[in-house]
Amino acid sequence: MSPLLAAIVVASVTALLGSASYLYQKWADRRFELRKQQRDAYGLYLKSYHDWTLTEVESNEDKKAQEAYVRAYRDLFPLASDGFLKAAMAFHDFVWVPPYPDFSDNDHRARFDKLWTDLVVRMRKDANVWSRVKRDEIKQHMPWAGAFYQGSQDEYAGASEAEQTPDTPEEVSHHDRTE
Image 1 (cartoon, one colour):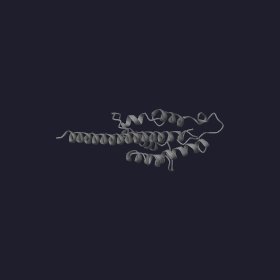
Image 2 (spheres, helix red, strand yellow):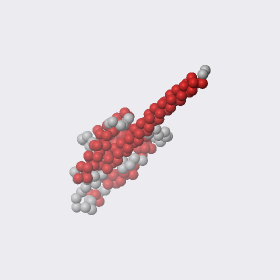
Image 3 (cartoon, one colour):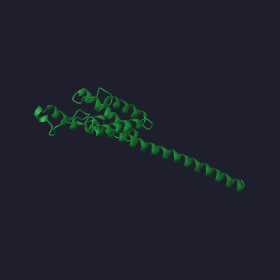
Image 4 (cartoon, one colour):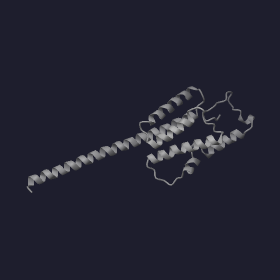
């Protein structure tokens, strides 16, 4: 083989490998960016629901929290994986579409726990978190709806009427049916 032909072959192979490497890197960068956007969207969705539950019903803060929740829910559709989107739609239908859940009802509380846990499990799966944490363990440690929160709600429900009277002149009602 002539030196010129050998140089052309080496240059061609190098160019081909360089192009393939470039394309693979672009694909990996796009995939990484999508995962980052998904994580941000998932976190915003969970946070916006949580923030909405803590607002006083029909206040300005409540309207802003509702808008933030709707925006976060809508923003899931182009980014979320099928699994997370299905879990979010089921959760949304339960908590957002009337009749709203009544957390004093054990069936509603159990359904909420399941739907919330489904969201967390799907989010972890999308983030490629490999773990041995069981669904029940996640359910036991959920924010505001876990055992500690439920215990405080049970105590409130079991308190006498005089003990339930708030210190403020107006009773404040939240979306999660807490005062």
